[in-house]
Image (cartoon, rainbow, N blue to C red; front, side, top):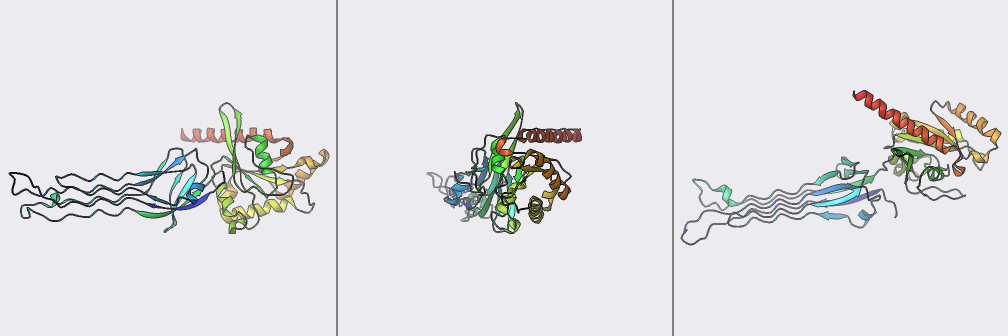
Length: 345
């Protein structure tokens, strides 16, 4: 299925029903009083997160969503029926914005989580409520109020524990294929992934984490170049970043150190907090270098970067060194959970 991570829709809640002006007309009761009922309330519009969905593509074709109107009040003090609510299913990880104000309405991060995005109108009041000692035959009722009408922007942000950073052709898709059951497209020529892929890395029966192969980044992405913020917003949810770099570029000219710094610049432009997040360096495609050069080349890159966090040398295509990284990632998350549990005590 084609991946779509942004869509705009219009939601219209139901209007409230009108109150009724009516008087009792019964045999042997010549002077029956007012008996107009109230109008029913309009239906609400809810969004609900569904883990069975992974794209917003349906909203490209179905943009208008309208809830039912409340029924008008009736005679004999019968209230109108409330309009039916509607529920719109969206993928887990969807962020909802009000287009008119650009404010965030909600963030659906759990399966089954519901969000009210448009409230139905209130039903009008029938004339039975306006009866008094000085006005025994009121001919007054109120109309139902209008339901909310909103234009919403839906953005899907990938929910993953680990995000893969890197320029196009750094080997991110090959890496995720090596450590999980995900099957993003790979090839022996330069190209970039155009949609995120999620893979579950299972360490043990009760130990696993989700890793995301996110579209490759290019210079100027924070300003919208290439896939731009379509890439960067997915990174914002991850707890750990793996920064993949081609240790032996095919052209022999590209400098891995400059590539790392270029991506760091884009992260800082988009959200400076991303640079404070744990980010491990993964020097990929080591199989293209002789064994006696791999460690020497890697240490030279790490030294030039003044890298302080963990770093690894791997060959994703040959699955060399990929499993030790997964074990370290799981250990890192286990330590985080233990620290959080200790802090709550």
